[in-house]
Image 1 (cartoon, rainbow, N blue to C red):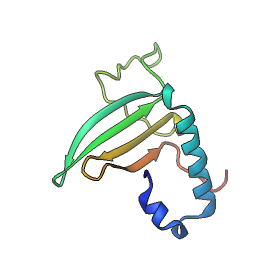
Image 2: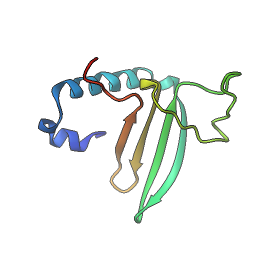
Image 3: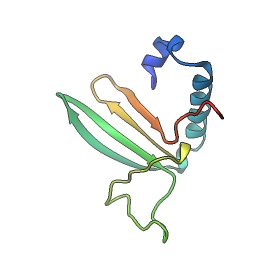
Image 4: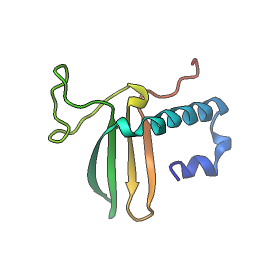
Length: 106
């Protein structure tokens, strides 16, 4: 389960935020095969994680960085850029970030 805390405590999240998260996740799932991926192993407090970085582009003349040789960091951009950590011990995903956070005025 990607959101175990949210599933256990839905009363702590505004309904509009939950609906928006559902819609953003649907966009991610619907475009999953289009993402370039980067995976980085992380050790933290004795636990092992895989940091998974997804983005919807590769090297271009406007952005010549090669994702196979350089870690890509993005801010904003909605479902085109997102990250998640995979906990090797619990086999769950944590800290999902879809860039471009939900705003109540949408």
